[in-house]
Length: 228
Image (cartoon, rainbow, N blue to C red; front, side):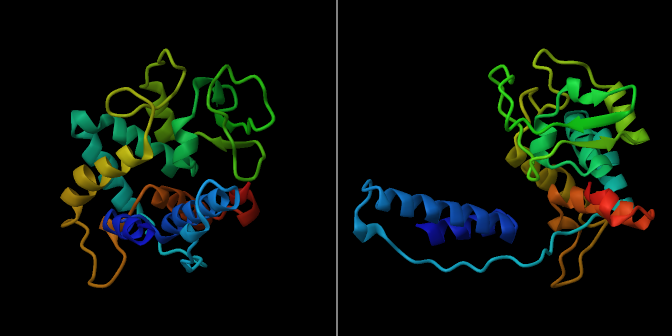
C-alpha cells in the first residue's frame, strides 16, 4: 500500500524530498502503532528509502517568472494566483508561511514582513500556531512588486493577507493544481524543455524560493544575509 502511494505521488509530480518526508512519516506512524500494541506485530515491514542529498527543483528565470505573473493577470479567475505567486518570489517565503500571513505581520513603517515563530506563545486566539523551521523570528523586505500587490489587496475578516480561488485559506495542493494546469501547461510551448531535462513545466511552488535566493545571490547579497 505504501509503495502504491509512492507511485501516486510520482504520478502527481511531487518532488522526491516531499515523497521521502511523507513515506517516512507513515512508516514511523505504523512503527509507533505496533510498538504501542494498536497493530499486530505481523504488520511490521521494511521499506528502505533513499534520503535526498541534493535537489533538482527547477529555478525560474526572470522572464519565466514574469510570464507566469502576466498570464495570471490576464485572466480574472487567476488574479489570486498571480498575487500568491508574486509573494514567494519577492520574499522567499514558504507556502505555509504565506498561507498564514496576517495583515498584522505587515509593517508599513519599515516596509517589511515579520515572520514570528509562535511555538512558545499562548496568545494565538485559537489560530493555527505558526512555527518556523529555525524556531526563530524573521523579517523580509517588501519589494516594489509585492508592495503593489499588498496595496491592491483588500483586508478580509479573517485577517489573512492571501486567499485561495474561493476566498478561503490557501491550500498548497490547490495552488499547485492551478499552477500546473492553468499556467505552466499553457505556457509550456513558450518555454520548451530539452528531452531528459528538468525544465519550465516541472517548476513548482518551492521553485519560487529558489528563485528568490538565486536573485539575491546574483544581486550580490552575502550568503549569511540571504539565510537570515
